[in-house]
Length: 466
Image 1: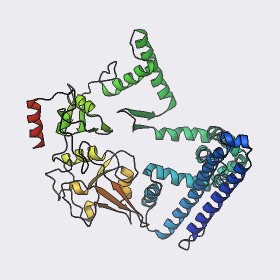
Image 2: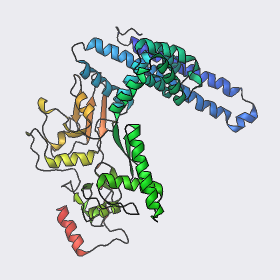
Image 3: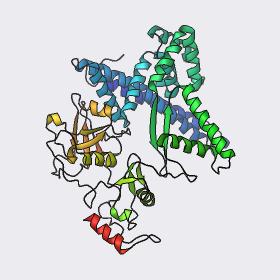
Image 4: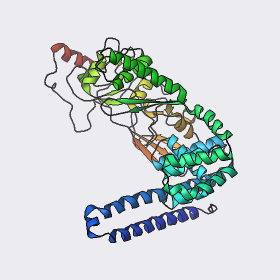
């Protein structure tokens, strides 16, 4: 599609295309805005034109972005002929994700979308022109995934004329209808392949809440939902004050944790709870937030309640007043100690590759152990599996902290720098441990009103700090 034999030729063409089309859309919006009568203008017609042209610009950019991904893939394959397919594509996924400031799975979806658009040239052209959204284009590509290449091209040509008037769901339905007409067996193959994508995902929500999403076969989840609904309805009929929705949520939690959920939504979990807090917080002498492992910041009062549960076991991870230090690491060991592993999982919380929101799967040496990287907190980071594998590909380098500044090996690196094969650099700033004041901000010295304080608590606080 583009000439990738000369450096900069493709990128210049792509940028010229982007600028030309976006400027054309903006000028068109200016003309429309100037044509509104005074009454329409008073109601905000010109502002609606701005909203529309911003959407058009986004669509144009996404179409050109797909062209850039295809050109990048072609150029990388020409330059790295000896690298195996898995290593090459994994490296591309992560580098695309960094450029987009998203997670590696999102980078992989961007790559797959661009590859699919190459087989749907008319759909791609509509996206590049700003006529359809990426959601509509994605719907068409997704529904034709398992059709033959010739069939996909034929479906693309047939559906293109109607896409501008279709929503993503209707575009998917129309593409599915065409696929079934061309190859009925493709639908059955889709059903089988889709079951391979069953997954459970976790997302933090506001106010110490979270959502757990299960994606699986429709008949199984339908049966699970009906069972929860029937049991919740029965309890509600027996006089339980909770709503049906609250009861269904509580029943699901009870089934998964084995802990009974009370009417107020609390439960006495029989598990270890990782909470990072200052000793002053535990003994009600400070209101700084704590951190719940796997979730993030929680209010001090909630941390105290979790810490005093009858069946809970709470770990305090930090051993120095500023919350950074950890002693007892062995720089020559291959594996990090259990204390370091717990510390990293709690402090990092999620993958330390910039802009990645994935859960930590691997406790990783930023500078690989095989290349002389020490097994110390300074060189430790939590990463997801795709990024851990991607950084081992040729051209990648991760550097803890600033290499020009000497730092203590037993202190977590405040900054992790990532360098890609194309020479782009990105930095991830580790968050300040919760409950530890930033420079110049002193911690609370007196307990909040209404909270208990005693000589014993003061003495225990002093011992913990020591």
